[in-house]
Image (cartoon, rainbow, N blue to C red; front, top):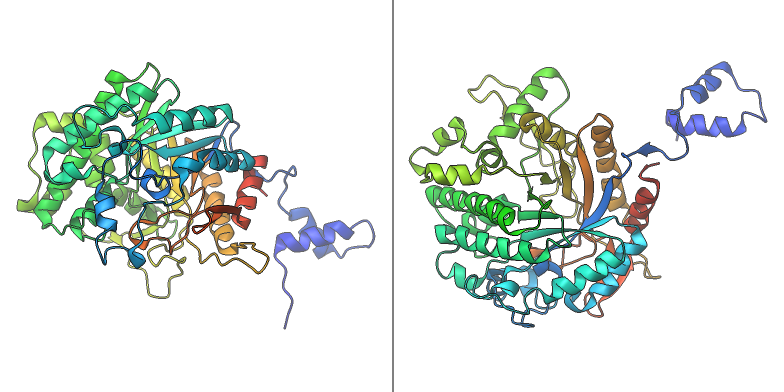
Length: 486
């Protein structure tokens, strides 16, 4: 077997011995060509915000405490056959009672910020009407401890836990839900904006509509036709737009409003001008019913043409609300959607990955670190966005503890290292990404996958609720400490 060295590793090796031996000219050349660093590696901008993220139903538990009402996920997860092993979020990480311990985990990592979500049914147990006086007590307690630890809060107002009474009236099929969401969002932002300066209206509109109302894999488990789903999508983006307006009306001056979108991460299949142009077109068209309409206040002609008679019913007033100006864009990036140029009307083709394409523990999570370069780059270019955050990025892993109780998740470290390398490439070129939130702070309830798929950088023993830092937590802590990659 032949031993092989990369240019960098060999250069480092010979560099270390240069004072002791005389090097051949070719070896000295390698040492001279080695990448130059100041010992801190590839930097991120000064003041870059390093964070982690969770979501209410995935971590909180305490589903029947302090007046919280039922959400669609309470009902769905308790329906036989809907989740892995019948798992529910009844207890989850018990974060409702253990938030101080979890904030200490954040502090130990050196986090600068933390993204959490408010449970709508804690604040308005039936979705509308009079607010539950205890509804925000947990978040007030948590925010005070978070700020005392020097960690900046970012708040998501809807991370899929729709109050069940609203679903009983049609949920996102019903336009009234958009108005109810705006009322809840305005009320909550008005109460929390003395300490929270960044609010995201919704998390991953595409996921809760298409999986919840399209293929039925997520709550509420419906399978609507094409027109029905298009109308649900329209009501959801309308809810976002009305919520932006409500937050501006109710929150304190200086509050920033955005969203966290899992956009289709159009990525050139390789970097030549024609494929880059195709990816730029695809970024706008493949996200036509979500980020594009939010940014532009109109649906694209190709999107409406593709729907035909299934196009949603809209009004000019609704479109104006949907296009309400936002202050920042959050994007959730896990995989790459590769694009190539072709001669079609659209001008691009989405490339289907072969069965052999590598993926992580979750089958859907194919590896595409280039997406963390191209997604923010194209979003900034197409819509002239000046402030962006990577609101989620991370991966599942098998995460089997060793006999000593350690979790050596080298696969997650590999994933994070490669994705962050691409993000650093983007910010070094001036792409305005201001922060990054690793998904997730700890293992939690992974929706229909229950507790089988672990996404945390802290291992959670769900029988004892013990938290254990994984190797990936050590890696992330080192990245934060140096504000860059080695």
